[in-house]
Image: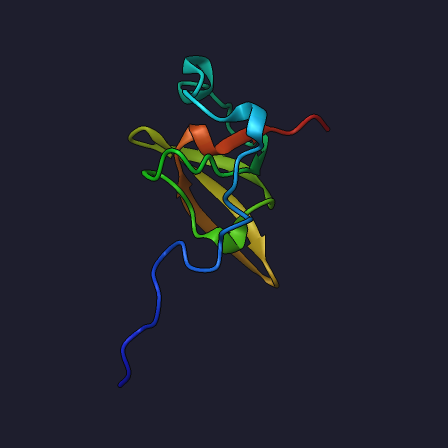
Length: 98
């Protein structure tokens, strides 16, 4: 058995990068935003806050809110042919316009 190379944020130099005008303190309403059940959301990580962040492979995917667990939301996404439920803090979610 070999040891796993790298960590959680390996090879994400540009994926988890904020635009220059969005750097600095985060907005409080975005941190405490609320979502309804079955609402469509987009996974967009905020790299300044690590807790409640999903695995970087799911960055940019859309999903549906299926419940709440503590401060985080259960989001149902489709990864290839499988449906997966991941726990995501609301600071890493944005509401989908469609």
